[in-house]
Length: 542
Image (tube, rainbow, N blue to C red):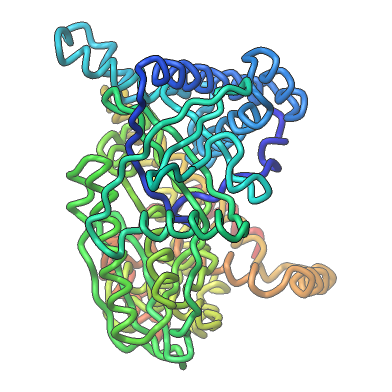
């Protein structure tokens, strides 16, 4: 696949610094509406065509010419089709979905239409909805030098706003814009006021227009960049760290003072988001975002969130259908984006931090010390990272990383778990449950490899020359990378040796303060695990 699409300019989403308003369009003649619908079907076909060509590695400039000639439209429309295709392809990759299996118009609706028992009015409604999503799109990117938008432009005729739609060949169709503003704060009033001012002064701004077909009616969505107020609430008065967790599904909020100390914590349940459809989830997400921002305004604290790129969604056949269904509805990234938007509109500083190891550090370091759950502890690490603090390994944890008895015990426990999983796989007859066990086995093997590698690298037989080389490498790579790896090793070793539950980390308090891992391990597992062959072989390294 050609990676050029990743370098192409992308339109900022409406949940960034853009405001979007929607209006209904009314056509004087059915013929005019028909011509616009034909253009929308043509444009939708252009998007699908461009998507396939991008998958094959087509160059953008050449593809633009091909679309203009093939569909007989101007290059701005063809460039817009390529942009939407590029965004769709990039979205598939970010969601870790197979781009080749994408279904335009919604896979969910398509799967419902495939059911043979679905007939009559219900099938007709679903088919209309799917076809409208698949073929009812028209998009025109804004351009400041072309009075805001060259292909689809708002014009005031006799004190009534109209939309002038270029059919792609130099001909135009006019449609009346219908939108009633029930509140003085309606964003539509601000938008048309800005357009009217631009018509008088010539000081235009770009606005993007997207036409959509819904229930047989044509709607227009106008998007423009939002002017945000000056930031007045900063981290000088402390921050609120935010972490979203799946079990139970909730928001964990931790209030941290400027010096990094925890002041208090709270949680907001998100279970209702999993029970509603997409539109209701969006509405509830905005409500949650406003609630979080109100808390930040009241406390006069900045907000710290994770800077996320990808989120696991699971895949078919992994044996975890309930978890996969939950992850598909998980609005983590979208909710954080909404919180960021509302916060910036209220002049609150939003700090994004690297999400790496926040959960691991929280559960191993702060959950046992403060007697809090791992979700709250993770939010606390996020808050401290937003304030600029670095998390160092406690002294007794550093000692464990060099303790051969502790590492050997953890490795033996890991090997015992692998043997147990293998036995369960042999006895399990259900294919999907067996797939789930295989995934667990693969993960546990990776964890064992991590422990074995660390055990070898920490061996006392390491030569003086090798120690010198490692010290030089550590200076080159930086201590941060080394500490992150240490946290990961500790997380695996402690989970297998000292913890009965992955939700209760209170036993680790004794390990942090006294380094009494043996006493904790004895309570967690009275019987010593069988010594595997790997452990016996490893003693040759020390």
